[in-house]
Length: 487
Ligand SMILES: Cc1ncc(COP(=O)(O)O)c(C=O)c1O
Image 1 (cartoon, rainbow, N blue to C red):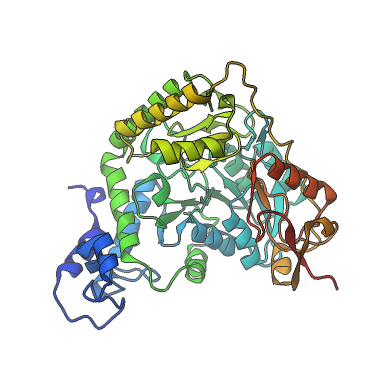
Image 2 (cartoon, helix red, strand yellow):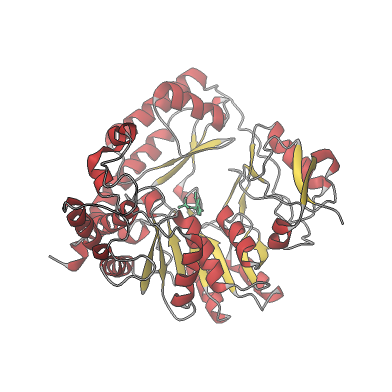
């Protein structure tokens, strides 16, 4: 049996869980014996017995020398990294640690304006100064793609002292940027490229999927193993290669952003998901691709629907598209994505990952079945028969994303400054103290430290009037906003 087909952490956990002993350690349910009945009924005795702390046979996540070290080494080997860390707080903690490990307070970090909110959290934690690069905007679909090599070069021309580049690839819509070219640019400047590959942990295991960020030369890559592979929710990995990242700094940063009591159920699920990919990845993903291809082809023939086509690969900010990700525009049905989502979810038993103003995005993974696809097709067929109108015009997108406003304060300074909540109508020229991100298109309009402009308020109000949603801020109705207190 090849070592990649072994599951050291699963085996160790299973054997410790099966050993009978008097438990005088955490967690308080003591291997399920004191668990509330309601929880035991929900998750079962076996899961509770394996919910164990860092016992001697189970190694230590923050100083691994035993089974965790072995399981992480197998993961590095499987994903093509030099070193891999298991994460128990999602890609969120990986992105935070990646930035903490590469940027000191005041250092500049180049990143896309539509980076995940964990990157904004990392700016606050680290004190790094963001150099935002606008992602390419696809006006026809009203969605933001990746950043381009040209825009990164431009940012580096203006900020040659930048300490690192972060990019998101793939996006939530499965759109991949040119990681290879951007890695080459970063390396010419002798700085690392960090890739938020939260949605791309499956890429390394099938030749028909876009190339994985590590294979394209990225230095530090963060993947939500729980999103696209079979690990439990929150279980993720971070991989490193090359000489531009100091692994000891990453390990130190990870201690800041993770629990000192990591769940062994999550850790073991990473070992299992890794082994599953190493032994059956291509075969399982072939089935997933086949299901997604069938859905894509048949949905595109249903009146009133448009499917984000793989042909868009090669347009700016989109070098490839993950064919296991399906985005369906429903405006030809005279419905918003939110309305279609509610009908599909409530009445047809079909639930999307990401509903938006004009479209719905569906994740296909190794867990989906042919029956799921039949259900999806049936649901959309019924919707189409009920709603499609012969000449239904597609909704206009909200207008193009706004230019990035001036930022008198860093995200960190704005976060720690005293703040007030005031009426949005009185907020012009004040400094924003929170993140304000409208969907669509998922590009923040305001971040902590940025000046609130009349243009920004008008834009946000338009998105709300069109039925879009605002995320990131305390008052998502936008009546009020949190601002830095005036001196
Ligand atoms: C692009 C992107 N990056 C990072 C994350 C954070 O991942 P996690 O949920 O594993 O913390 C997400 C979550 O949706 C995401 O979409």
